[in-house]
Image (cartoon, rainbow, N blue to C red; front, side, top):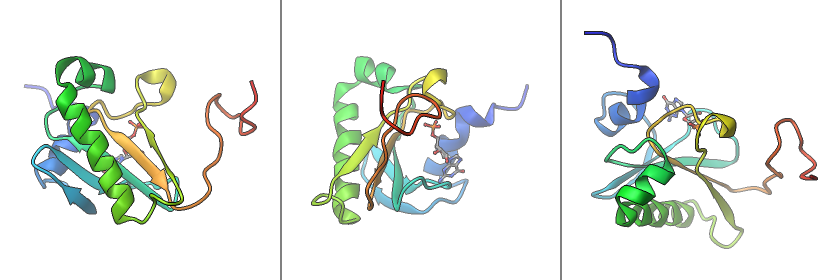
Amino acid sequence: MSEPDPSETLFERIIAREIPADIVHETSTTLAFRDISPQAATHVLVVPKTRYRNVGELAAADPELLADVIATAHRVAELDGLVDGGYRVVFNTGADAGQTVFHVHAHVLGGEQLGFFGRYGDESGAG
Ligand code: 5GP
């Protein structure tokens, strides 16, 4: 049998505690842990414990679980003191968006003024 693709199994292995992660919150259905390469003062990933490849598949299959992921993202924002200042929740979906791990995850970003985002290499937010 061939080796599993690491991009397919990384977050399952964090959920199973086979790979260490800085876990900030856990519920019966979700896990939140700090991104290994943070893009903001707070950068936390929220994953459902059941694997779907992306947010569209999750929404179609289990909207209640998607709501759990969003609720956990908000809880993370509360725990990191982001609610008053504001925060961003991002689901990269597919290659054009730069998704690299195909176990759906919400990025929770905040703790400082965030930049614009959109077109590759364009920081202006224009267009
Ligand atoms: P994507 O590009 O799929 O939207 O996001 C995947 C995220 O997973 C990236 O922000 C990347 O830094 C993060 N990541 C990749 N490997 C690890 C790891 O082993 N541990 C943690 N905590 N985050 C990881």
